[in-house]
Amino acid sequence: EDDGTCIIRRKGVFELEVEGINMVYTTDWAYANVAVNIGDKLYYDAAKTIKINKNDHSGTFFGYALGTVGSGAHATIQVLLK
Image (cartoon, rainbow, N blue to C red):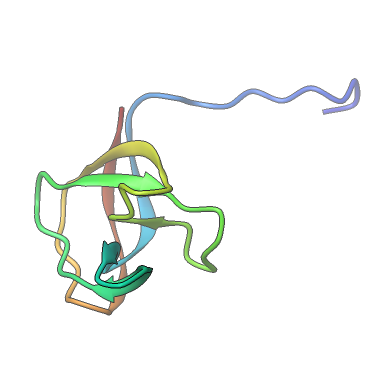
């Protein structure tokens, strides 16, 4: 807006692009492909191009999946914000 402020919504359901990945530890922390299922917790991951995924290691809790995404794929699904 003109005065440099804006209004954001922090609750509700939004259609967002989500990626089917997570961080896993084998010999070091690395991204791995995982499916996203309805009800899964989703996280904001600033390190990725697609910012919403299942990275519970270094991501920030964002909301819950209301749709599905295949392992390693990305899709626009409904997300219920926390």
